[in-house]
Image 1 (tube, rainbow, N blue to C red):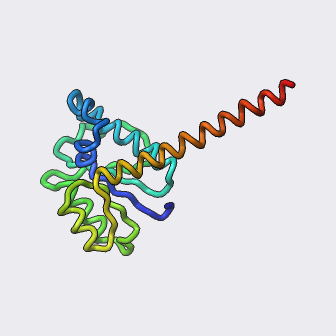
Image 2 (image 1 turned 180 degrees about the vertical axis):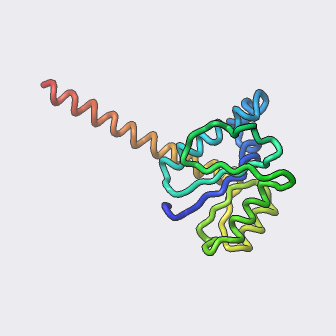
Length: 155
């Protein structure tokens, strides 16, 4: 949905999705970059706005150095990603446009009480995977059509 704004609790998702576990063991920065890259692909498929919020206590100096349309927010010292997400939803004139992806049950309840929607890490994983699978199928279809077109032109 183009008017939907997805807020991703970055570390909550990183620690719940199995594909990030090997990266987390090696480098938190690499895991963050992989999540941001995946969210960029997801946004390219789905449209709309995506904001990934990380707790600021592990903010890299100078940021992650990643250029993307996905907005990246690091909470300020003494503030949590949850607090940033709550402020964004709570101060919005249209909280129903927010979908918050987090495995924090208390956070899900709080944003839902403000009018936003929420998804668990597993639910969000399924949504992202479905979008990316749909893109893969569309690209395969285009590749097949291009092959067929190439054969017709060479005859």
